[in-house]
Length: 533
Image 1 (cartoon, helix red, strand yellow):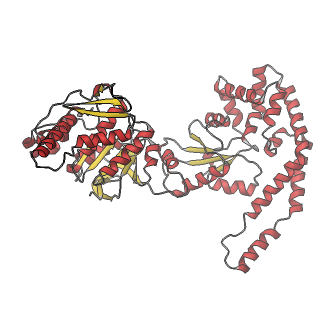
Image 2: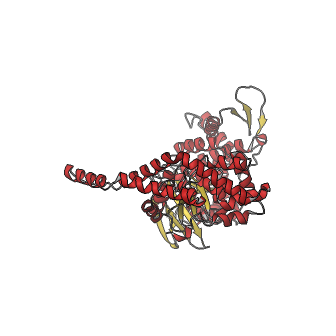
Image 3: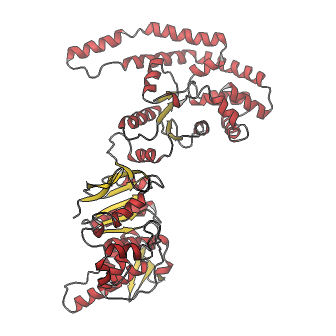
């Protein structure tokens, strides 16, 4: 059983690191980071090269309809090294593997060994049959029959039919309708090929599989590799992939993140386990070519389009609630793993006090200069663009909209004040020291927090703040204070539009010739992420 793999130390190919492994290994990273070349190094340069079989992503799936047999030693040598002369290959196996199997181009060569695999399988079947008939073996447990069993368990709607020198396929529930191997789908052929490569590898080997998910549906590849790892539990499976879903599915695997390759050295690291963050999220961030901004909402949220327009040089990822955004940004920034890019979060202001806003900023989470993201769509500058598109007089409509918002705020005043007061009280309660030990200390900490909260004073100050906004008729201050998602609907109606129609209009404008004007309008209200961390 292989219990380690040898890798060049990160940043130095002259020093080797023996990495202990208990199960499989996943090598992942962005396109062009050097993953495939690291796999080729394992096969051709490492101290373990004699026990490595690598299956490249670039491979021919041309499965022959007919196969002949050969001497078993020659067939095995041809499959492993690309050349059947056993004596010559023994003198310098690495040379023949590089020259014949990989055509002198181990990184880019189209691996074309399906026919060699089939010749070996039918030769091994013939040899097992002879051994059994001659009494040299108690049973005929050929690799080809094992492949048939696994293939049919992965693709239960199909059956393999083994005939003399050829393989055919049929639909499980029908006796007729046989078709030749060359007529199989890419998925059917690649499943057969991958099973064959894994089962024909010598005991205690390292199997390097480049892009194990290629040509396979997600519902198939997870089952396939689980079965093969169980079948070949004497081997170590090293998967090379940029499919983050595949990498995340391998929960028990050792994961290696390849950051870059400069032609001589790899920059890589082992990914630690994350108890509070989803692994697929960590991998997605690691794979990003730019800094990342997490925002509230879903991939279908209309506000995501404004964020993506304004922060076009960043990867903008929606992650549901503000609590999710805060947890993810804090977790990633505190992990110490992300050092080649910045991680930010942007959330609604809601009813947060300045102390809370400043605390969030210290963790890389910034707050909008409006109560909630929907209010970005009703900024004066945005409304002006909408009026130009609808051929309305902007000054008249803005005055009408301001009056409408004041009217709505007055009607909601008690609710808005109460929620704002409750928000401030909740924030003050968070200062309770939950690390206090002993009854006396806990009671003292609790008493100090509660006694510091002057509810009447908070209510009075918040009421003054709202009264001042209403009295001053300040529309922008209203957008900072007023939490009401239905404002979009109300303002759309002033412009003769429904909520969905108004939002669609703004999105169209943002994608058209006036996109720069939309970006300019957002500058004063969206945070400058470069000012933090």
